Length: 377
Ligand code: PMP
Image (cartoon, rainbow, N blue to C red; front, side, top):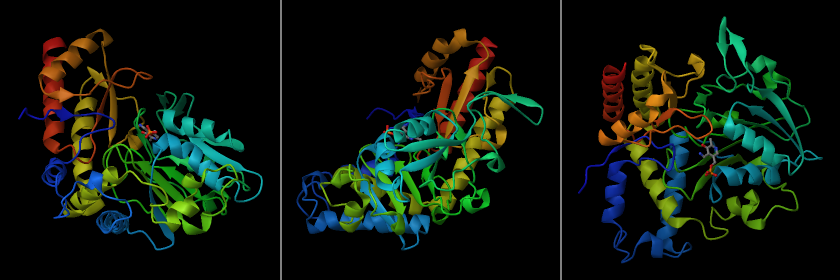
């Protein structure tokens, strides 16, 4: 078999090799069932077991209280940009929601919600600012919580806790009571750092994440919602996307993405076996410290993000001489380092260093960064 490259893709992205091996071993015959998980009825006892186990493992990992529903849905993060407003926006009367804009994905959420009701930007970093005497460019920082202006009558306050493209991560988020809006629950798009560190989900009303970064293959979205927020969907909400239906039927209101849920379930078991989310955090911190430490030690490369909110998952960087970009990427591929090209909207490079990418992968990247600099510096 060909050696696997170190895969820095932002998603779909690297999965734990042992998960792939187990899926391969079970491909033709899942646990003596005589069939692949792909061939099973979503209502049969085998798949019900797989789905319920995935849910309970996820609950364990997050320490999730019983008053939160866990739903495995379809539509990804982009789907949730519409599904969340349709479910929640009208729960306090005239549909209204507030947004914190810190990058591409929170902006997309804000724009899409505008189709369903009144939207308001509570805070935005989409402009340059000075922090501690240093210039920070647009979308490279997080507005301090004491500047957020949340409408008290809003149905929720949305933020994206890890901007996959920009590389801005919230290490914490405020309680809306401290923002003068105690009845406005937080809704968090945690797609690209889900399960990468401990998070107290009980401090928000909802959290959702596409699986294809830290939690499994594309096709399934993990949706977690406090139960009292469910059941007040706008009349236009499709039944299959109404959280009340999905939660009542334990993610089997319609046919869910069965194989993706199965693989996500194996990833949850892998996280549990490797120290849970605290274990993931320790490993992710070591990887991020290694990479940022090197980027900061040289002027050949640069990461533009305000240091306290640099993402541990997605590390964008630019070369001081952008004319070297093609040579950099070509050399990286030859060295077995793949998918380092930055998102087209920001250019440069981006290394996504999700849970399943081992420290050796980041070590290999740093070695390559040094070597490239030696040759071209
Ligand atoms: N939110 C975030 C933070 C993302 O990274 C992405 C995808 N990269 C999305 C939303 C959109 O997800 P999808 O492509 O699954 O619709």
